[in-house]
Length: 374
Image (cartoon, rainbow, N blue to C red; front, side, top):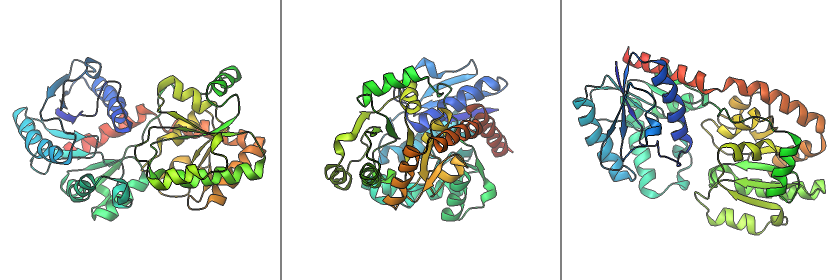
């Protein structure tokens, strides 16, 4: 079998969520299935680190697809020609895009369709492209994969397709996520929060992540708890609209909010594992990778009752109403004052996190590829 894969998001030192999904899954799939050939389609020069085994053939296909007009050209012109030229049996697209112009069987991985519910967070042409093409991708594709049962039902209901056509492939958690000892925790607190304990938020700083609610809830928590505990925000500003800026600027305890910027690898693990809890009251998640990462670190989790988050958290988190600052602040207060509860959530989280491994993810994705081929 000749499997073509959209690998345009495998960018050295620039892997984001979907890039990591592609990396972790296809590193395993290509090595586990040497009997098959894999064509990796890049839209720019590639790094040798991403050629995982001898059965991978890298192919650079212009143009560099980083804009709605170039997305259209790459997926509707360049990709169909490449699939035909290289006689591919299937086209797997881990970033959810697909091609309407090919007769080759297709399997896009649509991680979520938050843009159908939160259109205000995207640039105009990006929003128009997603809302026009993703329904068509889902409907035309041979099969679809996604990362949670919630997203499966959302895609099926929104795009009017049979849920039996959709396979769930949970995200995994990086092997470097693990608990750290007291010495390391104290060291991290010394670096980031002047030695004080802290709640941590990890994610893009955009409205969907509910930073306004988190800032307001943290203020309420500080007033109730009379504590030096801080709030550490990990992530790059993706969109920083006036609403979030104003919420931060009007905080009573803004001096106790620390912005670390984006962190990766061992440093992210150490920061996550040294936190009092993950505070992740997002409005919408297709999966919510920081939840699983925090649980793997033994860090208690506060997250939302909405979308996929209860599915990922199971019984190993405090679930809050993301629209209620009282709900969020009360959960923070519970973690602050109830050491036994925090310990129990940590233990449950370590167990729950074992459900989310990249080995399991790769096996599920391979099963979906086999179903697509038929």
